[in-house]
Length: 249
Ligand code: PGA
Image 1 (cartoon, rainbow, N blue to C red):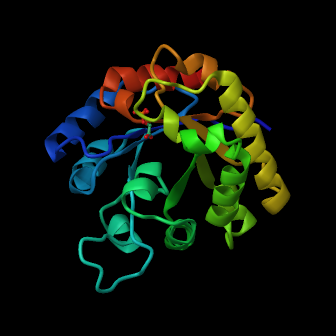
Image 2 (image 1 turned 180 degrees about the horizontal axis):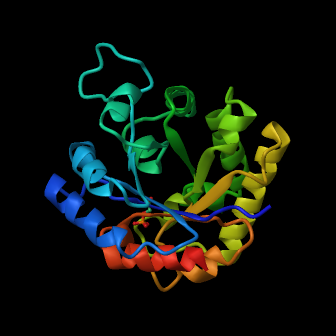
């Protein structure tokens, strides 16, 4: 079964509302056929990006959400609020959230359950640190993160989840995983999804970590790499379009 590739840009803490709208307008005209594309603006730029993305192929995802429906959680945003802002989906479990904001596998799972229940699309990010890879713990860490992250989701919800494999040592460092290393991790993750949920052929697995226009094609050529989650190179519409074209083949 062939999976439609998916390229998403994670802008992190970059771009104001007018900058987001200008990006979407420039990018929308360059999106090739045969690939799904999304941008993940910061909360304050979501509405502007949604407005600019109307009647285009560009989906808009938030970078995070809270797992509770509502309540006394100062500074947080719920799934319902994201839907209200018109967004299509949400990125959950990015390593920067895990590293700097104390997100746990359990919290990531609660977010995934809530997001799916609300009807948001989900990108679930997983990946090992440099220390974990050096200690030969990569598969143990990935297994823990993938199993926990997807726990309690229906097979249909798992199939509709995009998993982003992002080795922490490759994020923002220029140290892109080799296509061999990335493919091995993706195949391992796909095997886990098959064992636990039986939908491995349908689930899309993006690679993330220093993907650039000049290294995207060799990564995306691997059988289990279904596109990418792009940080730094997603801030420029021409770069993100070039990466999307590499995924489209
Ligand atoms: P990078 O970030 O492309 O800048 O390495 C990827 C990510 O954090 O999603």
